[in-house]
Length: 473
Image (cartoon, rainbow, N blue to C red; front, side, top):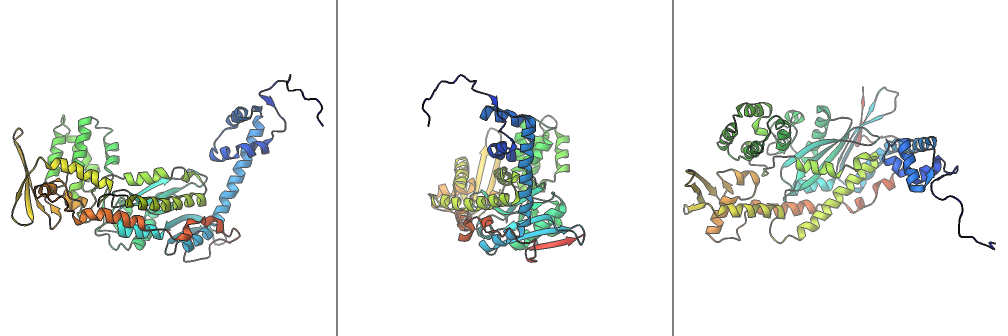
């Protein structure tokens, strides 16, 4: 029983030493910080403890606390790989029709299997891409930041609203032609791509052998970042993008000549064409089957940016975050498409508005049938342009309609002249239909649960040949 209490203290308050603050106490309070910042130095941890708790600890205590945390993380890291096959089984069970492949490698006949690579392709992503996305696939790789060193390879599509749609992903030891070839072989089987005709991919070396007829596109932004270091200037940059946006073969040399006229840049143009063939980054040489005029890889960079935090975590945690992100994105995009007030997505609407503004400067002549000629005259510069618009074929001689999949400003000239603002082409309707179909491809109801919670952590290493394969050196 306390009979007398003195609330005024005469002892020194503030920063002090406490022998009971041992390594285990530091781990309990700062374990998450140490696990997330594994390279933290003991002196920095010591300063953090002093700042947060007003207690001095020794360097040895901080060093021992870091050792305990890293040891625990490494044990969990090993345990995750032991149950990776069980995770794959649960992923296939909760998402029927999905394809999950794990490859293990044996350094010797008596050695334990060592993880080499893993491929994941979910049913919802497959259905959404096949029924609701453009026929273009972006490929890219990014480094893993955690204890597991390697790279994450991703395949990303583009929906009807010109937004990112994740398709498949793979964990590999490093980004090589062999790893990309294995990834593309599985992707080719899952997407039922035979020879690649009518498709466009973003990787050149592994694609040539597997898909000889496929169109390969390079990122124009990356090309300029490398080439523009030696050839800088605002006018030069603008003209480079004018070249990439050329839509007809005759327009391409005209744009090149304009670049040559900029302070004698002939050598720069020749260097550009020598290192990067124009058919990979100029729209004039793209086929008109894909219906997508994209010339950069922003959609792949977007996915990599979203996965920055997940790439620093343990393997199963990382894969679960990717799966949940894909599931949540499908749900969000489905709700998003239901709020559209017109027959196409907001990104397409903005493109239409820009083209509608341009159409006011063109003269339209009708041939009495389904073809029209649009003419533009500049009396000051003595320049003249004319193109034919074929509405029934959804085509324009400028190539923009054919390559992008939605009508451009020259077709708007005819629409405005005929006061037929309700006319919407099938390609434009495709934008709304594709985006909604892609968004409506839902994951099965079982996939909403935490698949990792049902893993049998006593399960041995992989025995299911349908899921895993082993290679003996």
